[in-house]
Amino acid sequence: MKFLHTMLRVKDLDRALDFFVNKLGLIETRRNEYPAGKFTLVFLATAKGEPEIELTYNWEQEDEYSFGRNFGHLAFQVENIYETCDRLMKAGVLINRPPRDGYMAFVKSPDNQSVELLQKGEPLAPASPWKEMENSGSW
Image (cartoon, rainbow, N blue to C red; front, side, top):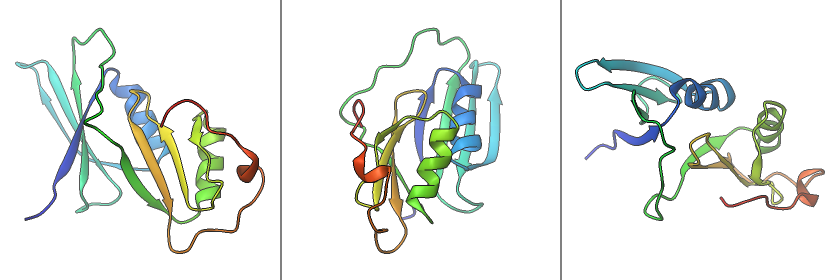
């Protein structure tokens, strides 16, 4: 068995791509337009050949999507949790669960999906301002 992808519904494709591509750093691996069904599928990954996230954009969706407890989060390993969180904050992303432990942080996509960031290897030493930051919202 081989894991292929996780699908996320997004209300605004440009907003979602700004978060996942421009801010998180994923790459678009392929895109399929379905005019008859009025939807677009965009596949993203950390690198070609890696498992993907499928963004499903229904062209006429007007309301924000609801979400249930059946979806937990996406998780990505990062080279430096502090640098990643700093870059995201500077890009306007709220750090919902700061990396106080030097190992784990949570942010949310524009469509309210939780994204976990995990430090590669051993946790970094606790450092300011992260070790003093409180949680914000849910994650």
